[in-house]
Length: 291
Ligand SMILES: NC(=O)c1ccc[n+]([C@@H]2O[C@H](COP(=O)([O-])OP(=O)(O)OC[C@H]3O[C@@H](n4cnc5c(N)ncnc54)[C@H](OP(=O)(O)O)[C@@H]3O)[C@@H](O)[C@H]2O)c1
View 1: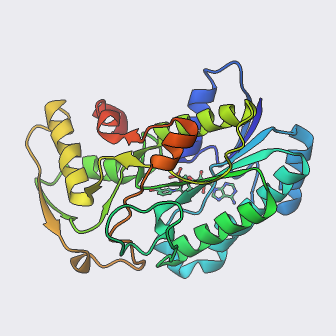
View 2: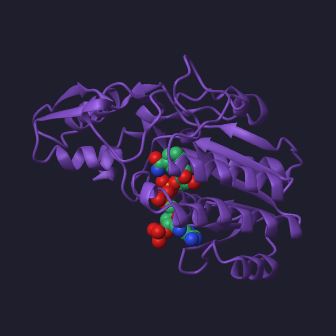
């Protein structure tokens, strides 16, 4: 199997590279934004035609949710036109495409868990451009997997776990949003999931389409923060407990509106690909790696 990976320096991209480096049965070419700008249709087409991958994994994205509100064109170019270029190129060389999307395609006002067939209604520019990207990928390449994930953290880049650990160095009390609920997801688990799906597609699976994949159990940001500090304390990464008070979304104003409920139902991926949800608490077991 030959795999082309875009956005190799992002959280998921970095985890993919580190896992695939230990798998001799998979040949891969991982490229950074500088090496392959997915918004450049000509460059995408050239590289895909030359490398002829069997699977393209798009780990490149514009992920600055708040900034997207004022950078609509750039967000759309990266999250919609980029995936469209990749999907078009994939279709031409008979490759499958695995594209990562987000819980922010949902409005967040549903009671209970979101399934893949629930109505989409993104509340901000980031979600809107990610949804447009999903639609472009589905339109341009028949053999597509769209993986919707949520609340991604890892040892790479910037994320909530790293922010909390940094704040713990100087603060003993914090206010964290307690009325938004979702599933924290370890990027290493997303990478594992993507590799497993790619392998199953190579073995003949044709279960293409949209899939939810996130972490269980579902929690609020406040509960997520509490667990991070509990692990940090038990692993002696902080010396004193950090108190985490719940604050309301209305008390923490941000340019982009976020879904109050983005809990994803992950049964479809379990049924079709035998993949279990990310165990995010287990991923925090070595808290040191996020410092
Ligand atoms: N982070 C989350 O909490 C979250 C939640 C739900 C879904 N997701 C989705 O999960 C996926 C992976 O997210 P992540 O957290 O790994 O993102 P990330 O860490 O922000 O990485 C995105 C990568 O894409 C690269 N990129 C940006 N523009 C590009 C372009 N024009 N061509 C090629 N590469 C480009 C970035 O390069 P530079 O660093 O050089 O800009 C960066 O390395 C994304 O599709 C995201 O929408 C993320």
